[in-house]
Each structure stands twice: as structure tokens, then as C-alpha cells.
Image 1: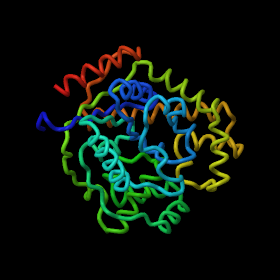
Image 2: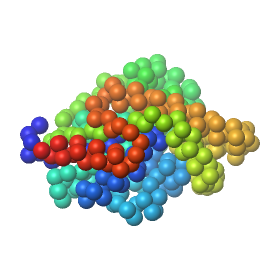
Image 3: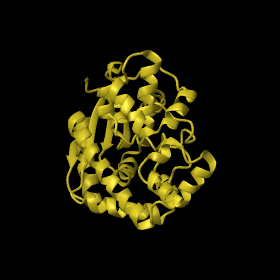
Image 4: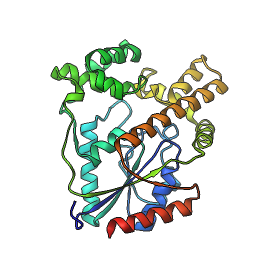
Length: 302
């Protein structure tokens, strides 16, 4: 890439690694907006369970790409990429520097590596049929029809499983065979967080979710969209739904959320190791992390 091209900073890392706080600190130091790349924070009314930046945090720095849709209106990867690229281009028109932050590897890859997902519009009727079949059977169908995509999609990820099946049935070709890429016209600086105390941070995050109203938020989502809403199958919401149904105690729900979060963080680490080459920031002190990040940005701009 030519040195006069804009620089896009990507702050990535597993869940609970401290991305939100460091992204805000970076945004304030560099006069940037934080562009969200967390696939669940795209949805309104899902604030506690997704650890979405609070009102106080949003007051510290401008945040974009949050609250784009209602939870019953899924945003596929192609749609997200179009919205995100438009926002990113608007930021780069303001100054030749922008900041993406998030832990959703496929969404980050779509933007930073120019992935071209298939242009297949959402098919509500098919999605309803797939939801009625249940996620275990849907993932089994995907393993039979597109084993490559199935290997990349977690067995509990109903949203991405349905999307892959949607593409397969609409085009007759596996999603994994249709994902080309066009490199974007800017330079990329990837900064990674992977703290040694991640398990303790996940435990604290889990306690905070339940303490700050995850169960009440889940109950409100069920009341508005029904218990079969696919996003309620995701970490935290699924356990809270079981708690509300009486099949888990509060202690069991919290323990299961913590376990699933650790497993998810492990998958994220593997993804970032294989598909990205970030400069890993060392330590746990936020001021020291910010200083390291700013030094890397200065080198990137130079």
C-alpha cells in the first residue's frame, strides 16, 4: 500500500479483553469515532447482554454502527459490509485515519480484507422454517451441504447457520465457494488485546451481565419477539431464557454463561491467530496499553 493512503486502525481481541475502554481512550486521543464491529451490538434493545457501550461511555467518544436494526430484522454480512464501508468512508473523508473495534472475526474480515459475500437477500419464510427445525438439525444440514462453512460456524450460531443455508438453497452453491475478496484502498494497522487474566475478566463480565439486568432484558425481548428469536440462542441470552423457563437456577445459568464465554473466547483467539496479524499489546494497565497503541499508530502514520 502507498504511504499516502489513509490508515485504518483495527482494535481486535476476544470478548472481555478490554476493547471498549481502550477504543474509547484511542478515539479521544486521536479525535476519532469508534466504529463497532461486534455482530450483536448491531441490534437495538440488546444492551446488557452484548456489553454494549453504556450511555456514559458513548458520551466520552462518538460511537457508530450500533443499534442498526431491531432483533427480528437480521443484518447479513453483505448488508453490514455496505453500511460499514459507507460509514468508514465518511470518517476517512473527515481525516485520513479511522478506528474499527470489535471481536466479530468474520465481520472484521469482511471490511479489512474486502470480502465479497453473495448478494442473496434475506428470505423470512425460509428462516422461519429453519428456526422451526431447530439449530442442531440446521447445523447438521449445513455440515452435509457446505462442510467448509459448517467448520467455520459454531454449532450454536443460529444466525450464521441460517444465512449459510439460505445462500446454499438460493443459489445451489455453498457459501464457502462464493466468498471472494477485493483489497480495500487504505492501509491497515491491527492492534490486538489478549490479556493473561482473561478468564478472571470473563468471570467478572458474567457477574456484571446478570447484576446489570440481563434476565430482565431477556424477558423483555421474549415478550416483544417471542422465545424463538434466533438472537436469544446466543451466549447469555440463552441461559437467561432457560432461567426464566425454570430449567436452570441463577447459579447454573451464570456458570453456563461463563463456560460458553470461555469457549467462545478460545475460538476468537484461534480465528485472530490464523486470519490476522495484529501487533499484540502487552500488559493490563490501560494507560500503558494506550501508550503502546499510540506508538504503533505513530509508526503506521510515518
